[in-house]
Amino acid sequence: MKKRGHYDVSDLIEAQFEPGSHGRVLKNLLGIKSKREMDQVEAEEQLRALEELIRIYDQSHRFTLVDVHRIHKIWLGPIYVWAGQYRRVNLSKGDFPFAAANQIPRLMMELEKGPLRQFTPCRFTVMDEIVRAIAVVHTELLLIHPFREGNGRTARLLAILMALQAGLPPLDFGSIKGRERQKYFAAVQAGLDRDYTPMEKLFNAVIRRTRRIHER
Image (cartoon, rainbow, N blue to C red; front, side, top):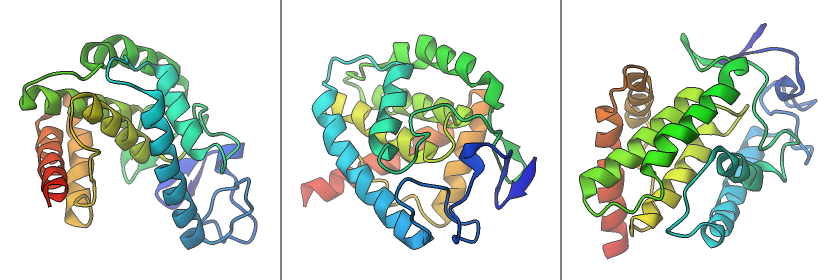
């Protein structure tokens, strides 16, 4: 394996970078070489995808692993040829390894039979139960990290859809930056021990922020 930035990857298609991007932009269908431009395009596509996903999924929908694939594909399909497909490379962030690539199909099936079946549709009426449901699904999906890129944003799209099922407005994750991003990653790591309390605290804060924004 070769180490590129924060991630360890092998020389598969997911690991290829766009020529002329100096190893900063993954090979893409648009030929984009600038990281700033790619960040902008991905953000725009994410907004488009969210609008489409809201039309697709209603309050009674139980999410499955097929839906997770679909969310990723709808968002990044116009950009990457491998969108919606499980990664075939192993990923790590710093010294923290995500699930091995060859374990992803099994782990995603466990996610479907466990948290997704237990917590979706997310129609709980008590806020603590809503937060718990979103936090568990979010943490477990991020620990698997099933895709080459965009796992965090895919998990956040799913969290938004679950929140909408519970009657909340679309979640605003704008507060997760700087030091809060470190807390966010620590909350993901805590999930290895089935400790979801740190992620629940973060989602409580996200929901409070979202409600303040929508009450203005």
